[in-house]
Amino acid sequence: MIRCCPGLLCIALIWPLLATACREEVVVPPAAPALVKVAKPLRADVPVVVEVIAQTEATANVEVRARVEATVERIAFQEGTAVKPGDLLFVLDKKPIEQRLAAARGNLGQAVAALGRTRQDVLRLRPLAARSAVPQKDLDTALALEQQAQAAVDTGEAQVKSAELDLSYTEVTAPVAGMIGAKQVDVGSLVGKGQPTLLAVISPLDPIWVNFETSEVAYLNNAARFREVGGAADFSLVLANGKQHPHPGKLAFVDRIVNASTGTIRLRVEFPNPEKILRPGQFCRIRALARTLPGALLIPQRAVQELQGLCNVITVGPDGKAAHKRVQMGNRIGSLWVVESGLGPDDQVVVEGLLKARDGAPVQAQPTAIDDTSLQELRRSVPGGAPPAAAPVAP
Image (tube, rainbow, N blue to C red):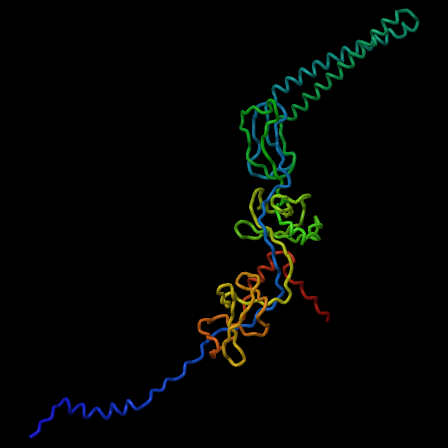
């Protein structure tokens, strides 16, 4: 009797089934096309903006100085506030000057009295000398004394006016309107001794100047515009915090000479400053419209693949397949990039899903729109950057 191993029996039973399974082919379903978002290039007039570093300057820095020698009795203003012409700023000690004025008036009174006496002598001696009742010498002496008395009166009057003027200088008032800075003296300080002492500085802030330097080439390229000093307000100002000054400025000054060591020329732009936000000495940036690119094509920067200075984009053709295109890029405008060459206005550019799209592979294109917010912000950032509004259609 032959005995059979149970393991061999199991293999014998399963083997036909395994052989049949190996002969069947495994069918793998094809992969679905990658989903990408596409958009046509944005076509618009693009302003080309130039930007330079600048610094603000007050239209005037008026120094308030003591014009008489005296001590400061009172300070009548608050530092860092706006003042008007005639506002009281400092009060100086008046007592020494009042005493000098009183003495000058007393001397003037004596001179006037002496003049009256000499005039009476002349009136009395003139008819007598005409009749030869007195020597002519006496009349000549009386006339000379009258002239001396008149000169003494004139001197006295001048001394009185000088003392009155010095007395008026003891109340120091604002000569111009503007923002007054920190006081340079304290109560009790002796001022005006030997030379006029600086008390404070007043700077008008509206309008305010902004100075910058530009290259000789840029000056020559814009010479026609720079000749129009005080013309159209076609400059904008960006502050240190990135915010834009709400008022446009106009060219106020072009220097007479080019700096030979730097090859630059100094210019000045005047900006309205009614809010008094701008202060002298601030660093900022001047913007101006250089030119406009008519009908330029723009695409998002994320749609551009840049490698070793070469730029490529992925487009989707009518056959639904992705294709690489070499493009030449221009100015960057926020999140957008100007296309100089390589794309047409009707090309479907992949803006999302670049890693999914392979050259020559089919893709599932989903249309989307390009956000032009950065372009609109650029247009608003410089005068003349926005295209002219369309004329209303007559009914």
